[in-house]
Length: 238
Image 1 (cartoon, rainbow, N blue to C red):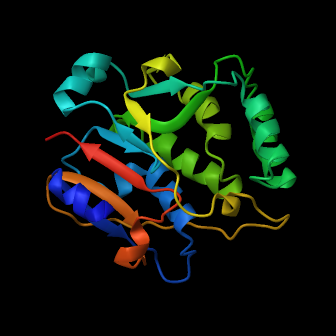
Image 2 (image 1 turned 90 degrees about the horizontal axis):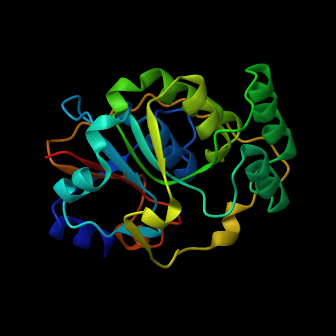
């Protein structure tokens, strides 16, 4: 169903794969594409839009989006979190709902302390990100490294934006050009046991033709696509 809708709207669905010997877990593969879009999109694309699977765009065209948010002026365009304003508060929430282990959360927070991060730059909700990914390779590679330690990417995003001096604008949550849809699948799978995640260091590069590209973890049977808990979508300039 999702693939059919995507095709009707001009998307080119592409399955993501992993290298032999690395994790094939869909969530980690999805987050790798989320943090390192430059490894998956053809080099002619300089701007990408990441969106989670439980939201849909309300903008009707890329041109409309560009005009609404002055996309050309920033390296990253993102939106503030609706409830929390610090990474520390986000870490507490993640730990409370057992979305990561205490050990992994503590590791990332210690890295931020070593960088003298003051946690005073706000907190973004990363379910939609617009970015000039080709200019952000160092930021993206470190973000990927951080989600291999602690997979909850919002805990490391604002710190790394600050650390790498990224030109960013953080819009109010109410201005997000999205609407929420039902989050399908068993969301209880988001919690984790007190164990160590497998490492995931893919260098996958998806070969695909020009156009709007939807990247989906593989292997997935067509009937299972609509049941993905989290889907990676990247939209590129035409």
